[in-house]
Length: 84
Image (tube, rainbow, N blue to C red; front, side, top):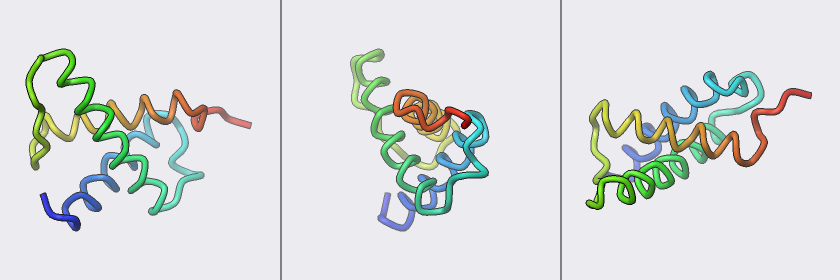
């Protein structure tokens, strides 16, 4: 995917992950993009460990689900989901 696709895909994945974890009200667009892109890498890495194959990201529901799961894990691990 091109850089613009990564940004859009990351923003969507980060936004959905923020809604799941409960941080969507505190995150801005840039944070959603960063969380989504990093989460996509985390999710892809975990999928490659589980399936023992290279997991390629493309515009599909499977890739989007992997990116969201990776983003949720990132938010939970970093503690960004804690409510103060």
